[in-house]
Length: 352
Image (cartoon, rainbow, N blue to C red; front, side):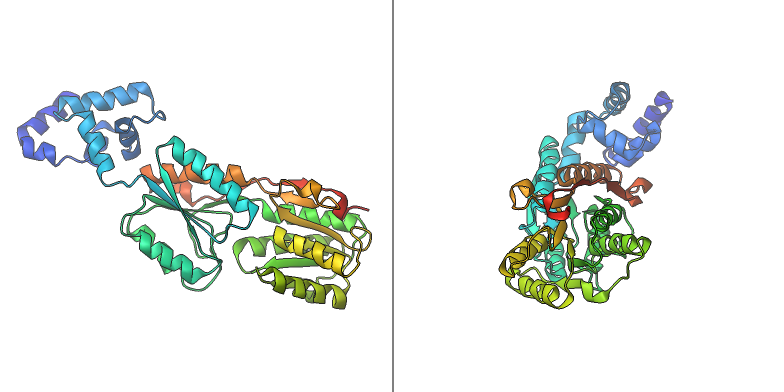
């Protein structure tokens, strides 16, 4: 079969050979474009026999593998953009460590952008990237909004995108996140089992993906226990510590919750501070649990109960998948979401 292919190529002359693309070569070898690409990039994720076959074919038709490698990298920046809503959350610092560990091992650099939870900032950043400054984008959604055309713009320009932790409802691709609904359900159930009946749910922007699914888990546990879902116990507050402490103090003073389930760690910390200001004892009068990646949760007094997310592992996996998507963007597997298990650590702040 190879002889027939070579004969036809040489008959067409050197001009035709110079126009041969990696797609053409993959088709003639009966292999995928990503497999051929990996052979020329000296990627370890390829069968040695397959790699030898590809390189032998390239040599026989008059092309050096090194020339192919140069041409493949010529239009690459070897840079990945990471777009996150904030730095202050320990989750994102851990996720970035996972992203950078994989990126560096594959010869890629990273650029980190922070949106401050503003979709318009996210859109501005994305539009600055479509000129080819990066080969791929890893993003955690900033907020819901209505216009996400900037994400579509990346895809139109052939820049692969992978979401992690937070996504948009209209995003048709897959993303990597935690099993937030199940974890929120178990956390709320734990509070109920510790005799809590007025459990407040605290969130910053409950309309983003994680805010919604965590709230669903909270509501599911209440419903199963026969407890009412009271809108007055659901607080939608802000990132600013001074303001969210005012909101939390008002909630505690007016609604008298016996427990707080915080969707993000900073709201749990604010709740502890407010409780101290109001001389409310934790856990005797107010139990607290939150989503968090704090390594020092056990050093807080009392030790803070947490739903600990696999942030580092999430960063690792989303980067591995992005690199695979760069090689094979049309593979249907990238439309599937992956849910990683969180760890529930129940400590003094939420128990009798």
